[in-house]
Amino acid sequence: MTSTVPPRGVSDPVVVDDGHLREAIGVFWRAMVGLPFSIFDVDDLQEPGRVLAVFDGKDVVGTANSYASSITVPGGAELPHAAVTHVGVKATHQRKGIARALLARQLECVRDAGDAVATLRASQPGIYERFGYGVATLAAEVVVDTRRAVYRQPRAGHVQLREAQVDEVSDLCRRIYDVGSGRLPGTIKRSDAWWRAHLPTDPTGQHHFVVHGPRGREDGFVSFRPVGAEDWFHSKRRTVVVDDFVHRTDAAYFALLQHVIELDLVDRVVLPSLAVDDPIADLLGDFRAVDTVAVRDETWLRLVDVPSALAGRTYGDPGRVVIEVSDDLLPENEGRYLVTPEGVKRTDREPDLSLDVAALGAAYLGRPAWRGLALAGRVHVLTPGALEEAEHLFVTTRAPHSGTIF
Image 1 (tube, rainbow, N blue to C red):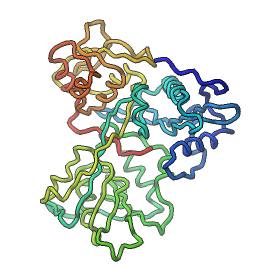
Image 2: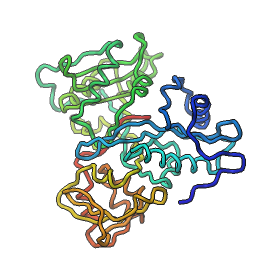
Image 3: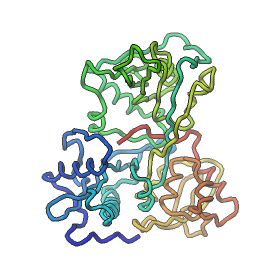
Image 4: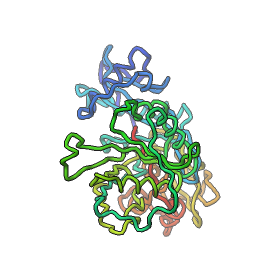
């Protein structure tokens, strides 16, 4: 893939210095058109060397940003990861190749920073496949009719739930989130800036935080808030929205979910981002009390360092397949890889499957995408049975899911 040359008067992407950070962030928010402008400290929006900008004269006309993070991959390992965000181009400068130049340059930057993987949330999904990103996780939006939702099994014994106070929420939620066990493939590390932007500081606000577990050993929390509170007393559809739901044990999952569903005065509970295989409906006596209203693309994933990323995860058994990977933007990733339950290594053997790096990104975290990718012509089957081998090797027992917006 050849990067588009910026038009006359427009610079190649460069790393932004401190004097242009606020201008770059402003370009992003204006480019989003429909998003409400968020007020952050500029220091929360950048890391040295990670904010890129394109200039027309002295004016910033395009920008892209990323945060250093880590991502959990199948098997539980955490790989160095770039959380890509704040990609935008001024409306007056769109369709000129600026986004193409930014995203291509950004890949070189995150590679040079040592990141094995990059992920993003796509506002315009048609753009990112061209840069090697594939849809690696999905998220289900679920609505529960609490009047019909009765648990098949009541809570067993004493359940340790308590409402967290605003002054303890920050440390408590971070500590629970950072517990290593119970993480699904696709979970990413949340930066300090993320927590500052998403945790409430107003003790009179309407956010509720409930935690599970004994003090000092909490293993889950749920954050929720009412919507339509101005007509709460008279509403026939009193609704709460779950903003964050983190559970490191099955006991925490069961108890926190039951707590929200059984709240007095609440008719509907909206959970905007669950894993697509979340068992919530199976917990209830009336399966139709749970309505999945949408399934959306969540994580778009790009393998920046294919050898390291493939070696960093585990694989199912049995299976053995040689995949040939193409990558127009980062050609050092190209080659043939032998994948077995024991691991991955480069090989000169004839390939069983060939695909580009975006298709590999779609399958990397364990989403059962291989058959669909082949039907779409994105994976080429060169050896009979190789597609089934790849499914055995790559697909995980739990659907990958992130649950973090950035």
